[in-house]
Amino acid sequence: SLRSRDVDRAEAEVLVLHRAAQCSPPFPANEALKCIESAYKHPPGKSEAFRKAPAIDPDTGEVLEHLPLQPVSLRGVGQGQEPATEHKLEALLPERVVTLLSAHGGTGKSLLALSMAVALATGQPFAELACKRSRVLLLSCEDDDLVLRYRLDRVLQAAGLTDEALGEQLVVYDMTDQDSVLYASGRDGGHLTPQYEWLRQRIEHHQADVVIIDNASDVFDGNEINRAQVRQFVRALARLVRDRNGAVLLLAHVDKSTARGSAAGSESYSGSTAWHNSVRSRLFMAEEDGHIVVRHEKANYGPRAADVRLVRLGPMLRPVSEHATDPAAGIKRDIELMAVLKLMVDFEQRGERISTAPNQPNNPYRLLSSEKQFPRSIT
Image (cartoon, rainbow, N blue to C red; front, top):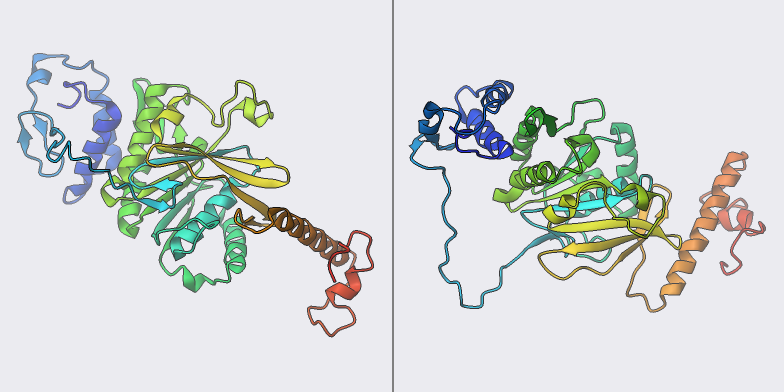
């Protein structure tokens, strides 16, 4: 029925998988996808039987005379009302849509996403930007559980928190050894996979308000320069959270020109312009002058946020305040701190123990201040 009316395949999969999950017992997602695969081998309206096949309401199973589409209500239009767009993370992460965060590999976007996840889960500000306390689901396809636990431990310590502060607000799935593809190419174009339905069910189970997916290259197995496939994929991600007023943060790599450091003619994302056009908010992360800079390059639902400047301290990202009385002093302190930490590492590696007790002869200042790399401004 859906194929006879030339319904987009990705849209059809969402309808069919949703209906299949409501069956008692649930109809297997892989079997439903086989049915769709079979139907979409035929052109739309292939036969009179196809053209006369009824449409089915995905929620009730009732036969519909037409597809379940309703016109947009125009009641109240013309009264100058502004749409109330809410954000999970002030300015950067609007609700009900997908936000794209792109960066060159190794810049720290996975660590940035984890830091955002903790801020959202605890309701604490992120780099002086307000966060709405949310249930966060993180799908990690690049870092395994050992790396995630280590980084999360450092992020919590830097914030003065423990795992108790997270409660059930943050759930993390390690997908590094799993089939994580949510959207794949086929002979008849792109299609959603059973993993997409699994993710939808996980979101429902955990009542997740924010979904963070790391990385697009692991979950999108379509053609990244095919506009139609990219649009289908981004729209499918938005549907996962739209009814919940949730938000999706999708991490992605940059194009080759940007990765090589070429500014001319490069884009701060990889693939078709549909990536830029389909998302409603887009962030770009880069290293500049010894800092990590997160730049808000697209904002459909409000003004773009000012650049967020961060400094990397080992496995942590620490914000550099834009409102400091003397920004240069903050940068100088960050450089001094890095010099002291490096000296501590050097001493540790050569077996010279540093005591944490201030009154001991081998306390940090007494041991390190004689080194030429030690900042002279520190007393």
